[in-house]
Image (cartoon, rainbow, N blue to C red; front, side):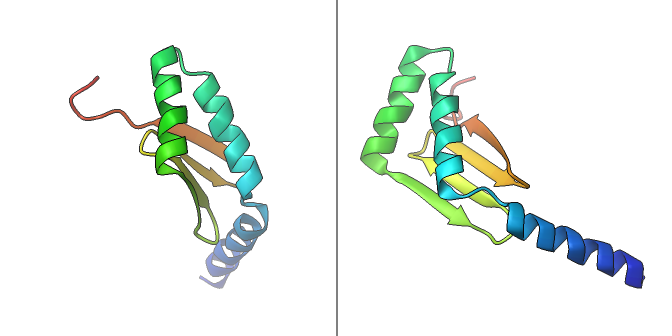
Length: 91
């Protein structure tokens, strides 16, 4: 049991020191927005980010970066993954 607690503690410390910073998250979000297949979605995400703003949230072992209501990126262990938030009536 102590070994399991030790492993979890080491993983948490590693996650804390390797979480992406604001610049890395912003670059990943911009890259993701640029790679959207539909130019109108990309333009909408950029405009939404300019109007509604961008936010960076730090949760100690992972981070979240949002661009308006359109794009959300999560980061941990120096890795970032982004997704496009479509309204529920679209598929």
